[in-house]
Length: 506
Image (cartoon, rainbow, N blue to C red; front, side, top):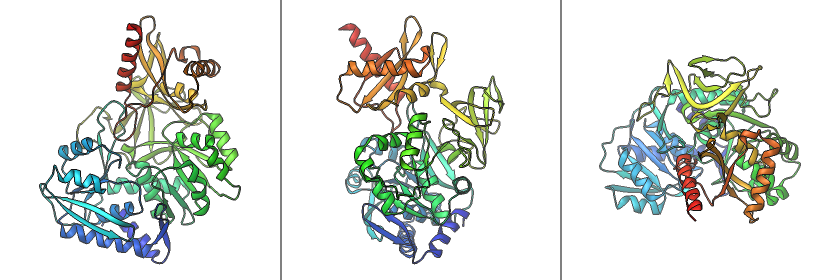
């Protein structure tokens, strides 16, 4: 049996009578014994239905306490789990099913009926301690296999990347890669059995799977599963469950600062050891305000699906605001003029290697792998003390009159304004400068757009270099997004160019 499945079983065995996982929606804690019973029951279903060695099982469910159960049961028969968003549209789910080979599907009732109209399936329903009704559709078209004990290099998890230009690539993570990544997370976050994590990130993301669920289970801690993030419930969930840490994205931190209901529920007796933030750097004023108001620390880091999450993290004792921290159990270099370097202040593409980094994608082969390095597509640099600063995507850089503008830099600035719910900065054609710095805003305020546009320009003048300031600003209700929720910048760019053309025509 692989090391990670051994450790998961060990945690359950050592906590038979201890409450270790809670489902917030059910408002119920589950003991190690109850989780063990569910894992064993689900394993028997897999064995009967011939779902086994390296068969792939698709999971399209919201966050729930049964998720860790499903994960462990799949791995113990040697199968592979592939989680996707519970909100995936029916047409996209059907395309996923038709393009890939699955032995079974965990879905909710409505989606089960939809799949049955298009695939030859057998429905196996059942009740577990952790869920009242669980639908497993057995695909009768695809070949199944007997259960087998997984080896370290066998695939355990397939994740869709959060690509920004089109269809996500599939990343395959082995048992060994996951175990290595989780061990690094435990060490860098100083996790112990005294910790309790609140899971609010969606479980089809690597952050929730590796950083939150697996690292907590292997370190012996407790898990509180929320179906989704709720600002008004957040501090009650932290307080009532004695939560010691949580992993979020910067958008959640901004919401917690702005939401009055959330602020009203906070109390000084809450003991949140740290908040882990990733995806993009927080503006300095937001980070400082959050730490001071809520009496905790924010650890910013850098990682991705292809690395089973974390590559760099800010050390507890030496945090540097604005940086993604220092490499942790990962080799990180900057590709500058075709050569890799760790030299300070050299801007280039971030490259990584390590025992938790993939060596290839499952489907298409790309130029992302070179001489043992994974080329991330992100731009960044090291400072003189070895801290990494991420400046945005290589392919997203805007050439404004010869000046290179990082969209992330401009987005970080504009997101400081309270009425900005989301912002995406893209390039649009400009006759004079080649490319215009174009800010696309989703506003949370009913204020007049012209007034907001003026506030944005004033703020940009105060916080950005002249060439970085937006020359065009558009307001939209939402962005085009891929199945994992990331903005499809190319589609957004086409949308804004069309809007611009219509304005000229009028």
